[in-house]
Image (cartoon, rainbow, N blue to C red; front, top):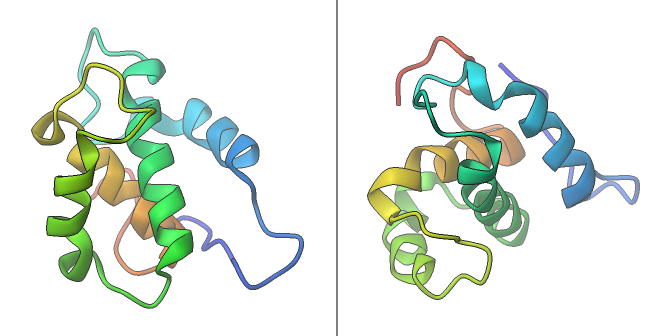
Length: 108
């Protein structure tokens, strides 16, 4: 499993640090499609990262509907639809909260 981020630690990861990790690792994710570069998934990773940091004690199942309804209003979403991006949001959520399998072999 990927390293869990500790958002109660004052030295916690910020988005810039997290973005570098995703840039280096996105292509190994099971949902990454040929022809879609990091920029396509960036908004999903950031959305998952930001929301998981705000709600670290909630599970993905508890927040998915809420996140889906907020995606169309998210300023960093780019051109992606929720259906195309939700796996990257979930992946980032699980990386931050440590709740879920974020290994590259796990199928979402």
